[in-house]
Image 1: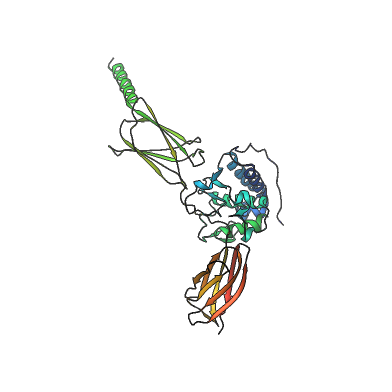
Image 2: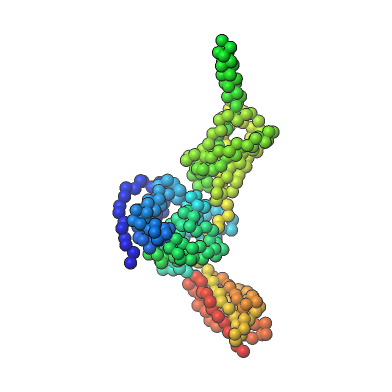
Length: 174
Length: 197
């Protein structure tokens, strides 16, 4: 059982440019990073300390507070981007974009409930999962994942593709 | 006295140079009209080929205060976005030339969530892979979705979630039929099919 050592720190007011759901999801995701199993997706075992988990959660908070987590309309995405992409990150230390009207907000893709690993997951939990997934991209722990790319996470577990990353997040953080 | 004159002369020269110089300010945003900080802004003098690079600040702005008058191309880039270039740009003293760039996203290299059901597996006859077997998912009222298994008998098919009839025909005309419930979007991996012998 992972230790849960969450301590409430002071948080700045988040960017007013994103929907409340995004703010709630980011804050909820940051709280989950206080859990050592969840933080293990980002921190090697030796680095997975209370202090580092706190820093990690603070870093995620600062992305939202600093306007690096944004919303974007589906129409602004490159042609060919599937309607099943709820969010994406422009690269390591880049920007995280949540797609307006997408699965992050509706829990549905083309009118149908999200399937696969996320089947039956409440929207609140799904949204937090998306944020943690994107934070892995932002940290550079996982790069492109649209073609089943393989990554070894700091906890030593190997994941494959976008769904592999999300399944690991689900397993360790929820 | 000579030194004083030299100093005054240098000062005047410097002032003239500054006055001759044009100012170019660049603003960079994304398609949500939010500023993009850290974007590279590169000016290229089209006559002298002299390059100058800078980066946008937190507000997505950067000003290049002392460009010699001339004709330039201005290119803006940032990881995850497509580069955008304007040319020719002719900043001229005393006007402050302002350019606004709105960067489109580069290709998104992140995978999506399951919206369809994907079935995959291997067709075998006995222990042998059924290379080139025709694998189809059939549903009344819609066209069948078919694929040909590879040399190892492996296949992969994606369909809208529903209950289907899975039909396989090997190169040797052996056939197999089975009902498969793919009504929940997601992956249905490793379904081995053994057509009748």
